[in-house]
Length: 266
Image (cartoon, rainbow, N blue to C red; front, side):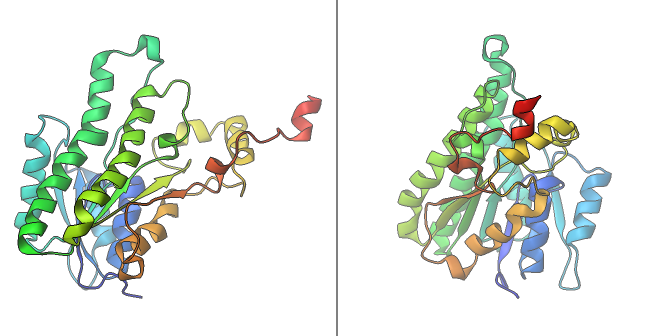
């Protein structure tokens, strides 16, 4: 089903994990895609190959979105536009997770997190939105938030702060850009299997606790957000503006689940 036929997407942080799965889903839905990674390595080439179909290639642009700011994201935007001047869809997925306990956190860690997770997205969105407004393009923007934008974790102050900012940005950008025909929404994953979460999820007790803490009892793979992304970027979601869709198995609805009975007997 070609829900995105004729659309042209630039997806940041898309050579692995959630971003790659979203890029692949957009390509499968009929969009052309430009991927982004920090460098051109084997994983980036595999990502491009995964997204390549008979309808055309999948290009990759490379570079650090955070340094220097704001030049880095502007440079990457121009690289993407040089490959496809018709880009009308932007997915801001690139982000980092380099937290430490608050009293031990240095400013560089906090600053790096905000630069990549928030500032780079502001710069990219503004750059594309100005272009679309001038050309009267019905642009579509999807920001990738997190359940951490709603629920805090003890040692994740920088990450939680950045994802809370993304929640607010989705709403604020909607108010700013909807009158111009530019649609802004977000997807907020819960815990998924990715390269970053795999070490923790390989711990059986941790994984079991997260399954208990999720109403549907699942910790899915990185492609769990792909369907939501395709829907929110498609014409089927034409009247959906400024919404953050939580893809978390219901975790964000629970105050605190009861532990399993067998745990209480230990």
